[in-house]
Image 1 (cartoon, chains in turn blue, yellow):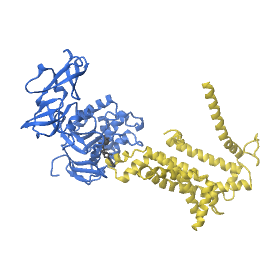
Image 2 (tube, rainbow over the protein chains, first blue to last red):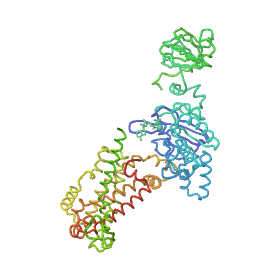
Image 3 (cartoon, chains in turn blue, purple):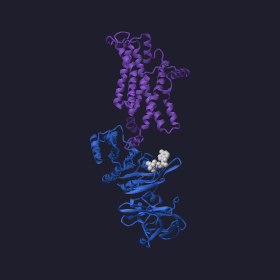
Image 4 (cartoon, rainbow over the protein chains, first blue to last red):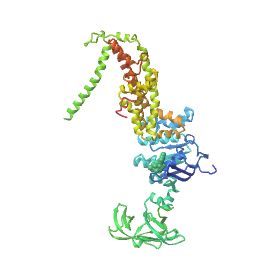
Length: 359
Length: 265
Ligand SMILES: Nc1ncnc2c1ncn2[C@@H]1O[C@H](COP(=O)(O)OP(=O)(O)OP(=O)(O)O)[C@@H](O)[C@H]1O
Ligand SMILES: [Mg+2]
């Protein structure tokens, strides 16, 4: 409670038997912030969400929410809203009954409950379906009911566990934008769980990349994309071109790395002799000697494929045993398949990480 | 060829229904017979046998006992069977499948065997309370119906509903009674109905466990037929049939017949 965070997760760990599912997780969220937990299957996203909701008790660590220490508080006193992946709507109640469920438990006056239900249903554009039984709703409508039910009790934080993943792609993309606008407009604080990076980029103020029970990086989408903190964060968000190598020389702000494909420079000092991964984003790369400047890395490769897409061409270049896809304007002539080319990119846009398996 | 096969299967289906229903029709017709011996074609209709039901020696106590035993054993079976089904579906028990099969196994056992076994067992342990013994036996008879239906219902039940209720402000107890019980209400109704009927018309198990003073309706009815085979028994049967139909209609209104028959969700 000493800290000002609206939601404060400190040093939370959870083990199931021998398996450590969460390992000293720290996460502070401001009021009104939208944060996504992004990570591959089994990395502990759902477990962390359930710890926040109080459905799972953490082994160590503390939780605070809206100025209260909720570490030992049961879920029914925490005032969190959860939208489950399966929606978990009550089949014996109609739409309005589901939305009113939490309000009824608070024993509010009947008129007040009805007014609130109407207001929340309007928020999710379901006024017309208030009397519908749950089984007569489409997936998208069920999703909205689940959202309305969670928002109706005005929770301190709303948690979404892959809440959009059951929708088809088009509806999902529309819902991402709409949901974000809605949550922002009512000033809700929300945590999303997803393994869909585009959803994470669209929905969040900040993204927590989770990997094997830890948060690898917690940053806004742009920082996460431009300056990934670990090679895992790099590979999980966006496209990247990666080579492994060994540092052969270094000075403050610069490392020289030998890779199987040639020598590269990276704008960060690493211990000479350490094994590293060197990477860049494909959009920084350009083709041909003529475009190279003094501040560029360059490698030789062979064109393995060319795809013409109208406004642009995608030229796939094989460098050692890695592939790098370079974009060219559609009008300029792409090099023929099989030809030798030079690929360059700025040293400033070169990323370097310790090789995998090291801290 | 295909239409011929369809027609044939339709004819067979109708024939099967007629075959199943014919005895019931005969019983109902016989109950309205004006003469003590039932003849076709009938010479008119009469309610005299219905009037005589009330005067049957020992009819009311037998009916009362049957309803009492069926109601109590169904209620017990609903509680015990549901808890056992939860253990089978959710308990992460070792050999959960074997446990579920064991719960349902009395269904597969001939009632005669069960009756004799219980009789000898009760004697062996010196358990001499006919009514309690009958209740225990009927609990064994009804439990599998409840367990089977509740295992099916629970394996369709999404336990995230409980999590949802907890986060919306329900305590554990409230989550059970406000969400789980109502969501499973159709299963409870079906289980209760089957269990009640299974107990109410049970003969082979009961026959071994009743004495002169505790006779259930099916046993009493067989006794009447042996003593005086007039249409009074047909009238009793018709009334039981009527009661069953009323129960089924109520259940159909509540949850749908196809769901009870297990032919759809
Ligand atoms: N109740 C439990 N008992 C034992 N292990 C569990 C339990 N719950 C989760 N785990 C394990 O913890 C790990 C993390 O699970 P979690 O559900 O948090 O993953 P997730 O990141 O949500 O994955 P997904 O994207 O597949 O949903 C998994 O390896 C899982 O098997
Ligand atoms: Mg999950």
